[in-house]
Image (cartoon, rainbow over the protein chains, first blue to last red):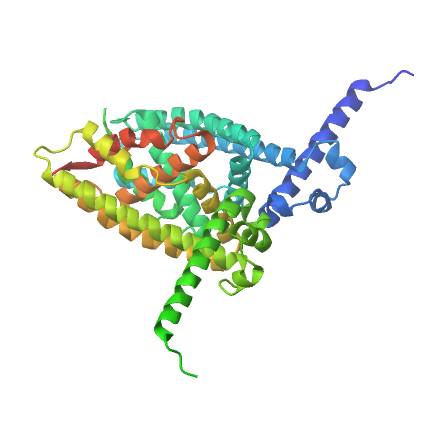
Length: 220
Length: 220
């Protein structure tokens, strides 16, 4: 009746479980991007991850729950990445003897926003989620929550970067951020449809945001 | 063998045909918004419009073709609406003895952008179309074309309104327009998810765009 290694076993079980979850999420990201939410069956996700349906249902109650978990993981990874990049950029700006020129700013923005994965397939997933949220109120709440969380992260980050560059916003920070967010989201959509180099695509953001930032901020 | 009223008959036939097409498009708009592209069968659209499948296929070769025709009609209606509102606003600004204040500008923007139909169901349709375009290259080209057409319409309109208000853009007009377009699209999405009065929703655009316009334009 007694177990000689209960803690080890528990660790093992929970590590196993995390690994199963991670592999299911990775497989689901691929299958959802390829086939959409409607076209991505639990069977297909299990086949891609090389798991049984039993393994699936011991981790997620439905395809929709898995989808939400996937989005949550992606938002968390993006928030982490923004924190790291913001810390690097702020440090770089503080150490710089001169305030940045517009050309410097364009370079910083480009680095800050450079893609870290398959942006197009992520954008497709986000669009699927948006449709789901438009049609199901529970999804709606989740969507708003993700965005709010991400947004407050961004707000602090952008303000501290602008401050480190020796400037301040002429308009309220939250409003400036709404404008930047709209510009970024539009560029990502254009790029997903027509490529990163398309007019108004992501590759123009460095120059455009630098121009905008020099118009809606002023030296301190 | 001779027809006493060939012109009348031809007119009658083409008017009948236009009416059938219009009724199918109206029915499809409702069915697509409710069930999505995948869930909207030709049967369902025909039932809603009270037509047979024969009437459908003598007008459209497929559900997808109907969907594109619907989007084209909507874009044309929107372009017409923008032309009318821009002409009214330009006239109003020209007759005004004083240049507009920021409060005036907020009012003008609100009127200019006020919804003329069911914006949320149209946004859902656009999102469906975006997903279709992301997954099918032919859709992609159409999407880009619609947007380009709409865009050049907007560009002339916004520049002439700003000019009539006695101001000019500090940054290039096309870049200002990209920023405004991104802000508008974002607000429409937020509103479709959380209502027009939600923070960053459409009902805040008047005040926000006025603030932005007074920052990125200057008096002539």
